[in-house]
Image (cartoon, one colour):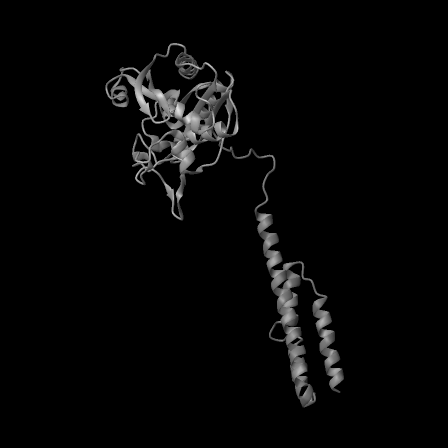
Length: 344
């Protein structure tokens, strides 16, 4: 008798398993037949009293399997029908015009950086990049920076927390050191990249920015050669009528050193503010490579000379597009960036 009861439940499970409601009507019929108040599984529970006591546990498990299978099939079929209904509601007209997608734009820093690289490439400079985490030798010592120079202090340089002998580079001049250590002159390179300085963020300064450093080392390189290269660069970037001037300055790794200004003008109140009333804006620092730097990098200063220059790309972008706050270049405001979609 018990075996017949077991067989009847197993047949019920096979019957349920073969069901696959595909419409709302079929799903409702399935629910009434197997899960409703008068479902076909319920009478099978009444047969429990006729099953031998030692087999009742297994018989109960088999009944539960039948009920759970019915519930699972009902739930899955119900979800499938809902999904089909939602998809049907969301059908769209393939002939309707699509939504316009806003075009991206190059960042003003990228625009100016690419222009600068192109200018120097056309006159024989090669682009070289290197690491952003440096040691004291490449960031300071090899660039003739004294041990007591303020730039070495933690108030100016970002040192690594777990290794105070390494730091985020404060200038891309470090790339020049790597090149001079590994190659023999002639060397004619520019090194674009990101640099970091512990500065208070304001309208004119930021803790991270981009630089392009240039280096030319060969026999008989002169200050006049450097001046011609800088004149050519200024004309190419700012126009043929640009006016520049060189002012004496000091950098540990160049001697003599100079700062280069372009004439901005004094035609508006903004011009007075940007130039501090002088009409001139600094665009870069430059100078002849100090013989000590050449010697520390393994280049004979009696045989070779060279010049170096460096500029901040954000500053160039600000001057080129008359942007009055450097922070705007780091905020990723699409309203600001979209202005440069047609810039070249």
